[in-house]
Image (cartoon, rainbow, N blue to C red; front, side):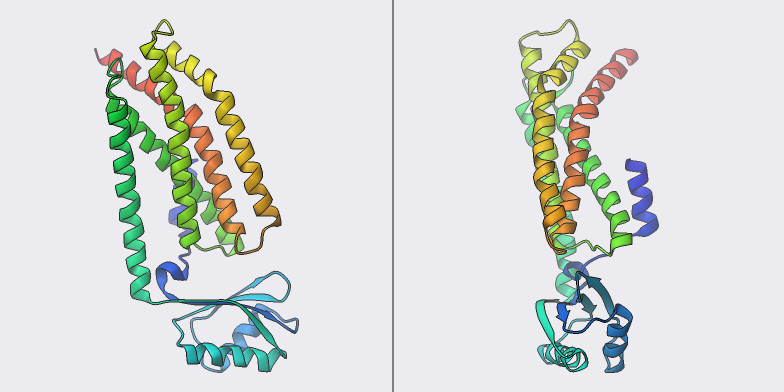
Length: 280
């Protein structure tokens, strides 16, 4: 899944929203039935360039262009109303290119810092469990699984966005941070049970202890994931075009997080211990 996601990322690329690239986004509902090509031709004919027009819902359109002044914004609306007999503005966002670039940098460094702090905290929390696996390995594997989940989420979202026109915006960043928190929490639940069972000397060896810990937490993790995904599915199916990409990203990320916390994180601990024994 990770390999496929990375291929999609590099081949298809990310469609950055105006939150990161800067520009203006206008969502309107037109009074007359038309198509994206017609809307683009009309606006280009009066001087608007670098346009992207996307149809959403019935007679609804998303228009992306360079950063518009308020005068240009009102002129664009006037053109649509004059041409199509009316245009209702549902949303208008405008972000300068400098702010978009700064937001991209801030988001990247913020995520890296958060992951580093969480990894350090987990290593500290598991400091009393030094055998047979060092505490820092719990933290490292937790962060690795979180990265796995986000990479899968981004890859699947990029593929969906290629066909559906979805962009990476501030809402997607919120979904990614939510998935990070969910994934880390789900992984720590399993690791914490391993820690308890090691302290209570449950299991003949480390592999058996890990296996028992997974079994003890499996139902809890699965039930939590299913109920969460069902709630998000309702938003995905019945929500509007604005919330649908956010819900889709969350659903994919949580599914990946549930998989990694059960089938990747703990088996990786066992594999690490096995490799250490083999070297010894």
